[in-house]
Length: 572
Image (cartoon, rainbow, N blue to C red; front, side, top):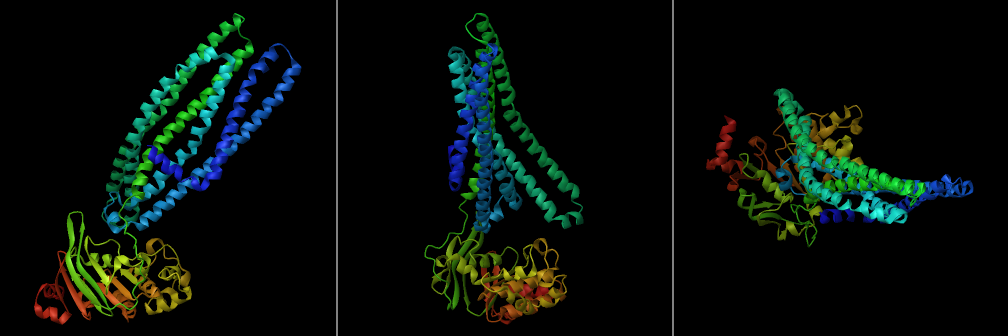
């Protein structure tokens, strides 16, 4: 528990000055409120005696304390809310940055997928934000409690000590409730992650859902997950809200007992009406800090529970380790060498002892059935994850020794599943290289065979492409991605089934762009359509994570091996 709280409070360091102002304002508010309550006794005593001059003197003091308390409370709450917003926004930024650093192994295996990560960054962080707003009460109200308690001791110390006997009972009850909340709060957040994931799938997959009449299936799934979530939240609310009535019952019993006692004391002449009213006023005011402290304590349990989930992701080790040597990318390299490279997801071996050499300027095609390891070979080259064993070199320079940003800056990627940002066409092309003037985007679009269709768009290069580029056709998106790769102007090119999802007419248009893109570059091409790789300098055939054939199109056909079988199947 303390670890999570310390880590969250550490996020407040950049706002240290504001936190100090919050604390000082809280102290001022507590002192002013307590002093205002203490004035009630002399006010009522002098009122009973009709001492008008004394009352006139005391009223301005009471009003002064009220004004100071009000102003101090304003700054205390206002600044604490701002600090809470700032801390949680900082955590959101850290999570986003962490998501982008985590390797593909993490993203491919996270149990609730991208929807769960969205829930983490919105809902879980939101719970922390709500809790932090009340953290100030943990510091303000104990102080107010102490000052009001001192009032009671001044007025009637014997009665005050008798009242305090009840405090340990409330403390034990609080501890019991907090244990229960730490158990059920993270469970509720887990169900919320599942719900967010389902909602995201309902939006992202709406075309398939409608086509296969899965609306009811998805709706039922969310209903079931909502029931689990509500059942858990019901337990959380039941335990957190029970504090209010329990405290109020105790408080009412104490107040009634004090009224009976003080009435008797006044009757016996051992107390004055002012003593009675002053004690009751301070006692009733004492209920507020106790109640607010309890609420804040409950919220802190939520922060601890949710914070544990967030820090678990922030501490996840599944990042591609940064290079310790930070070598520059070798500009005059001659060969890419895969040496005894193996890779596995858990126990499942994806690549097994792969040895491969790629000469600079070559077009190398990777062929094989789905799951044979083609994409893994190119993913390892960009260090989306690292090999389980073995190494990859540019000549004699290990890619792990090259500064990661420089390595990826020298590799351009074009995939089958094109991702475009929800931005303009020009900005999507220019995303390939932030150091290059945007004016070159049009030139690259011409080479990618995209210029003509872009000019037909409502705003030309300033036209927006929609979420993930859904305002464009598949062929149009692919040509934009080719223009983006050209704009990057990297010496090494990866084409991951770049035309496999296109119709024949679109493929012809895209292939023209690819031909321009591959000129003068080293290219690794993953392709299912063997017709697109017949000109490759080297074709690498994989099966079950192992290289079983290497050669040109003609030589592999003569061997009549695995490649020959693929070719014959496609021809037929």
